[in-house]
Amino acid sequence: MGSLEISKQETHIKIDNSISSNKERKNDIADAKPIVLMSILRGLHAGYFRISLSLCSQALLWKIMIAPDSPSMSHMHSKLPPMAFHLLWYLALVTQVSLCFLYALKCIFLPDMVKAEFLHYIGVNYLYAPSISCLLLLQSAPMMEPNSVLYQILFWVFAVPVLTLDTKLYGQWFTTEKRFLSMLANPASQVSVIANLVAARGAAEMGWKECALCMFSLGMVHYLVIFVTLYQRLPGGNNFPTKLRPIFFLFFAAPAMASLAWNSISGTFDAVAKMLFFLSLFIFMSLVCRPNLFKKSMKKFNVAWWAYSFPVTFLALDTVQYAQEVKDSIGSGLMLIFSSISVLIFLCMMVLTAANSNRLLRRDHVLGSATSPKDKQKSLPVNAAL
Image 1 (cartoon, rainbow, N blue to C red):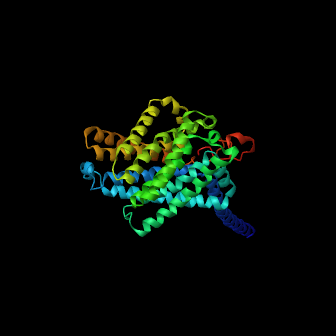
Image 2: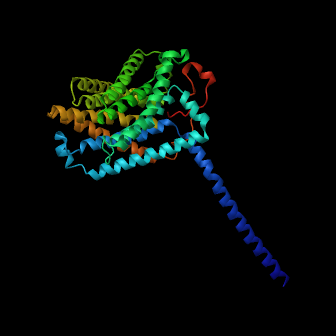
Image 3: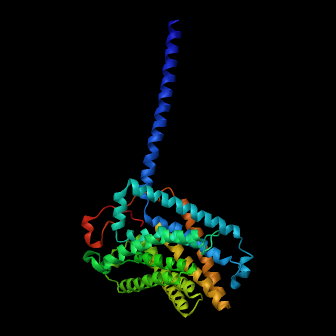
């Protein structure tokens, strides 16, 4: 009898231990969820909007290629399924909403890191990226016409942040001694130019020519200033991390987007649009002929690689517009080549991102400065993959 009572007690103790261990395990899982979320938010930065930029620009490319009213695209329209474009657009929408939601959480829970990014000479430029992605998403939307009221309201919702950042960024170049463009200029500075040009194209699509010309002139004047500054290799270019060299592709993204914007403003792919297109094509060839420039940055995948995708897509969009204008074999050949390259790079980036998704949001501190190259000793930690 005594042994039976002891065995019952042991059984009871074992049951109690299993129940308590299950409770502890559930508590650990519950505690781990906010820890994982905060880890993701710490690793997230505006540079991740390169992914949605690529998706949205790719959706715009497909929309133009399958348009039934494009005379040079009649053979493409029959081969490219419209369903693929719709799936791509909704994928871009989900990606953009997800990134915006996560970044909004970061603004709430980690305002100091957002402030550090806002003050960073590279990171501040990518704060334009959410607005650029939204404007491209709006321009490629399959269910909205540019003359609709909803389209016009959404345009201003996405364009106002661009103008606000313009006032801050361009204003400090004029007035702030420690924030001179000659000290801060880097290839990422061209993102601000692209934002103005995308907004100009959106305004032109709605028929707002004066607004489009205003945004276009604002973008092009600063593009010329930034391009000349970078061309002279002033001190700002020496503070650009090696792993961010894919951002050099922005050198031809800006004139390519300018060509698209001017085509929408003028209503035809005229001499100005062609000049900008040929400039972007020349800069693209200049970069492609120098693979050693990107050799060190290609050793390990990071989100900066997405900077290869959307600039090539902008150039592909240019070739489509050029082919529609000239209607010859050269234009059609360029359109086919660059559209294929754009899709191929985009698919490669999707596969590489999926394969490396487990480490992409890890925190890194290679950039060092959170203010300017001149004030490195006062820096706050900023993610390296800006």
